[in-house]
Length: 315
Image 1: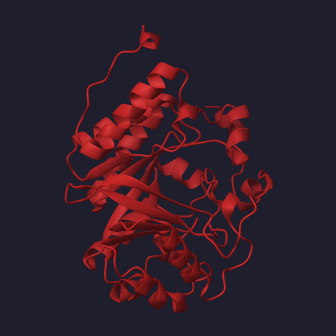
Image 2: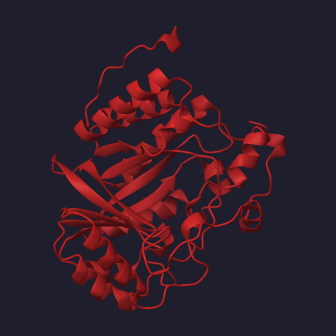
């Protein structure tokens, strides 16, 4: 990549490259869905995801586009439980739930601690509840919420990459030490964690993207996480589009995602998933796209390697 053109990446620069936010109803989640996921016990079960409408995350990460569906103001006490109750009334009964709020569940400015007890009451019929958090916000508050819950609490944390220079450029405002310390804290209190790992963040070549995603998976499992999700980095948030123009970011391809997923599963260290959202943007071959996405889906569910099919575009 073009190292001489690296911008001074900070909150101001990232925010200045944005477009407009999407219109959202602050009284309802901006989305929900149910998808199949292989559980830690090896069963394939339906898992619901509620995308809570919430204030913007205070950490302005370079690659993030979750701000598009956020509000400018904090949700008053009672609004987040109302959103959860509304979504649960729309969806079928499932055993597992992910609560994603475009930031950190344990950010007091996002979800008031006064709401924890009612949220826990609404979730009493689930087996597991997964929330997301920046590592710097994983403290005693996690334990207080866990103690209110009947289902098992799990926490998803964005590791992103263990490349020392590029992690800093992502404006994540964390270190790999912050990540490992937060996982250790959760583990010591009986709370399972999972990691988000980026495939091909900016300022990497394609081969570097694969290498550092694999090293990041290694680090995450060595830190004690139970599960890793590989997220191919996308454009579309303003800053990433500009980095495409300057040659500092290139979208990963599906073959790279396939390679990293195969590596992660082969470790037998825990579950490893490929994020399958909107994968068509990473493909230049329609035939390949359907073959690979089918194989990725199968590997996600089986947690076993699936042989590759050669495509005419490989010839």
